[in-house]
Length: 265
Image (spheres, rainbow, N blue to C red):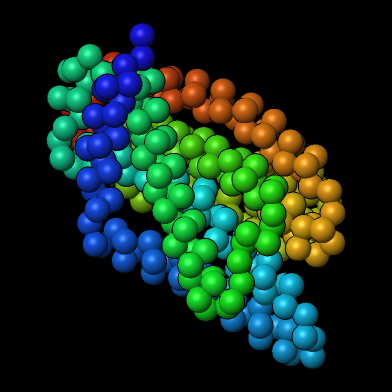
């Protein structure tokens, strides 16, 4: 039976690392960097074409903020494992009654909290720097944020699976895996820019439907619930596959010895 006490203990242990000033500075820097960069690019583009329409700028900065619900979530989940490895605490952790599912749930909670804090910081920066707000997406924003959080959990689970295989040597994978889907998720440009054959592949990425939905709302205020429903459907399929992959990689690594992960073999 799942113990919420054990889950809470793991969550508390890792939330203490989020209290560090360096983590807050990192979040503000990278989120602010994307917001400023794409906000200014959007403004410069509209100026060059002689347009006074700021919708393209709003789309860029809105998607830049929402993307971090996936990225910050997944990276934080990966670092939940990396923290245990660098602290040489993984063996001790699994010598306790803590179960894999409990540890996974705890990691997902920590990742979700970090992602939501990142979202709040992004919203504040957008309001201060560009006098805009992602709340203009309206009621669908809640469902869209939920889907992106789910995508982040799935990506984080995949990241954990690879780290269980590679150990500390795979720290670079935390960024490679998390950024690998950005070019294909339609964060900064619409689906139509891809060749037709690639569009059919990109369609199977859940985030694509969410970022397409933001464009639909901000440009035409059209119907987006079908896109959101498709993203949830894809996410649930990938969640099952990612869970199975995680269990497989964990069990395989356990047979080879978890100590090698801490030693960096």
